[in-house]
Length: 472
Image (cartoon, rainbow, N blue to C red; front, side, top):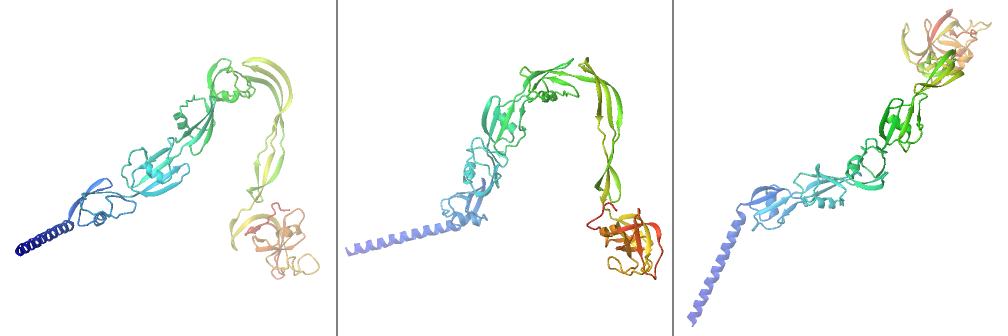
C-alpha cells in the first residue's frame, strides 16, 4: 500500500513537470512569434501596403513603419490593440476640410478622416437643403456616396436665395442656388420673348434675396406713310416702343398715340413725318465780351475760354408738310433762331515758375512785368533834403526798390530781379508815373546810376501765398 502511494506521488510529479514544460514551450513559441518580424497588410488611405514589424500593438507597428498618427485619424483595429491575430490594419488619415458658404463667404476649417460628405458638413453645422448647391473639389456633391480619397476636401456650399417674381401671371416665390438670375428663371420653367423686359439683368449674380419684375411684350403694328412694321414690345410708352425698332421722331414728327402715351390696347401706332419749309431772312446779333479769372491760364496772360458767336435773328414764312402733303402755310414773324454766345476771356491766375540765365546767375521767377524804371539815392530823391531811410525801415541802397503806395501795400518784401541792376526787394514807396507801371531803383549816393527806361522786372521765387492777379 505504501509502495502504491509512492508510485502515485511520483506519477503526479511527472505529470506536473510535463505541464510546466508544455507551458514554457508555449511561452517561448509566443515570444518567438512576437519578436520575429512578420508581415501585416496595411490599407493606408485606400492603398494597400505591406508592413514588416516586431511590434506588439497596432500603434507601435504603424509608428515603427514611419507613420505619424493624429487623434483625428481613423485606425482599425484600435491603436492599443495587440497584433495577435491581426492580419490587416486600415488607416484613413485626417485631412483638412475647407467649407466655404455662399453668399456669406464664411469659411470653416476642420480636420477629419471621414469621407462621409454629409457628416463633414454636419460637423460644421451645415445641413444643405434640396435647393442648395454643394461642390467638393470642383465636382458636384453626391449624397450617400463616400468621397474619393484626396489630400484635402474643399466644399463650396451655395445656399439658395429667395427670388420673388412679379409677372403678369402673378407673384411667385422660388428658391434657387443657380449662379445667375437667368439660370434660376430657366430652371423654374420661365420662358421669355426677346422683347420681354426684366427690371434686373439676367446676368445678375444670386448673392442675396431679390425681387424681379417681368413685363411681357405685346404685339404692335407701326404704320408709316409707305411701310408697315409688325413687332413686339414691353415698353412703357409709344416713344420707347418706336425706339426699340429704330424709329425716331425728329423735329416736328409726331405719333398717334403721342410718344409719351402708354402703348394702345389694340397695338396700332401711326407715325407722321412732318417737315416745314421756310423763306428766311437772317440778321446777325452781335455778341458781347466778358472777362473771368482762370487758374488754367498763366498769370498776366489772357486766353479765350469761350469764343463768341453771333446770334441769328430770322424772319420766315412757313409751309407745313405731313407725309409729303402740304397741310398749312403760315406767314411767320421775326424770332431769334440762335442766341448770341458771349465771348469769355480768361485772365490768368496760374503762376508758372520759370528759369532764366543772367549775368548774375540762374534765377527762378514766377512773374515778369514791363515797368518804367527810374533811380534814386538818399540825396537824389527829388526833394530838398536827403532821406536815408525807407518805408520798410531798410536804408536806401542798391537792392532797395521803391514802388507806388498801391504796389507797396500788395508786394512789400517781394524779391525781384531787374536786368542791369540785379536782385532787389520791394521795400520803399515812391510817387510813380501816372498811367505807367513804375519802379524806382535804390542806390547809395556813392554808387548812384541814373535810370530812365523801360525794362522787365522779374518776381523771384518762392511764390507768395497772396498774389494780386491784376496789377493796379
